[in-house]
Image (cartoon, rainbow over all chains, first blue to last red):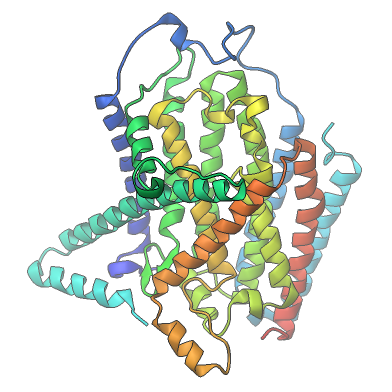
Amino acid sequence: MDISIFGIQSSTLAVTALLTGVTLVVGALVIAWLIGPRSYTKMKGEPYECGIPSRGESMAQFHVGYYLFAILFLMFDVETVFLFPWAAICRSVGSGALLAVGTFLVILALGLAYAWRKGALRWK
Amino acid sequence: MFDLSIVTGWVHDLLTGWMPTLPWLVTTIECVLVALFLLVAYSLIAMIYIMYERWVCAWIQCRLGPNRVGPKGTLQIFADVIKILQKEIIRLWSTDKFLFFLAPFLVVIASVLTFACLPWGKGFQVIDFNIGVFFIIAVSSIGVLGVLLAGWSSNSKYSLLGAMRSGAQMISYELSVGFSVLTMVCLAGTMSITGIVEAQSDGWFLFKGHLPAIVAFVIYTIAANAENNRGPFDLPEAEHELTAGYHTEYSGIHYGLFYLAEYLNLFIVSGIAALLFLGGWMPLHVPGWEGFNTVMDYIPSSLWFLGKAFFMTFLFMWIRWSFPRVRIDQLLALEWRYLMPMGLVNLVVMAVIVTQGWHF
């Protein structure tokens, strides 16, 4: 099944697509570099701040809540990875596997319920 | 129905006939052909989509839209591309140079790789792994990295905040996309893209899969819109708060590449919806209507696929131009409190239906 168009291995084609993407970006940048103007003023290198001189550190503080959501995401994303092989053969493995996966899902749902109860899902 | 593998097989035989002793050269030439197709299709679809969005947006807002350059404004996009190519690429003195230049690469590569996985037509599948949809999900999340890097390396407050919002939003909604894909994989019984399309030859999954397929479709439509930072979920670039979000500091074609990838992602998301729910390139068949089915079979498969993708895009644009922007707390609550649990329950219901053999 890993044979794709022209009978080439899919991994070779994936590398081809990757190189196509690189070519596209490099090509666009080279064209722009060749035909675009170049000028230098000191103010041009300043970060954008609605036209006034920028104040303070550019690395602003941001909400800690982003980290919480990132951790929750990790938990559920890894779970999705585990579920994919089961989903692909779920017709043939039948109800026993469904029961096992159901138990796994219930434990995860309890985790989500815990996070919800703790207020991790609330944006303060 | 026309099968492209006849053409590709003929080209392959021709090349092998010319150089029977050099199989690697044959493979290289074929890879270059594929790369050329990808490059042309990528740029063409981006151009078509940008104009499509502008016309649909104008139509929804009762405006005329672009109508000056060329007949009915069709050449506007070429004027825009030429203009954006002529702009200077500005790099701030305080940016992290390497990461700043790396970010557009990641964003574009993620979209090109996903783009190559779509089922373009019968026998016309560029990358066809047996774990196809899984590959799509894995590769498309590289884009999040590009967005985060773009904001982080720009060393600007707007970019940083925009990137953080964008990252949180994209990873959250990726879960819902993953769950709806998982539900459909459950129904199809395979992860390969050709396999999923073939499983829908006797009816599209949207019609075949009972209620769970319809719920998965709705969840997918909402989540995909958020995944693309579009529609009511475009807070990463909410212009009155964050100027332009993570690409504030990018200029000229550097910004253009982000823009390109954004529109391509819209097409990819619509293409995946067409693949999972609307039967990929399979024509519409109604059981019992023999004449109707024969007529539908005469329409080329690529047209079916593109038609479905354009229809889905129209749906996304309709949503985008109809709803007001949500707040970040509403956005995350929608995902984690509603869509996620719904997706989980939906998956279990689908699994029960499939294991009990209640599906059509």
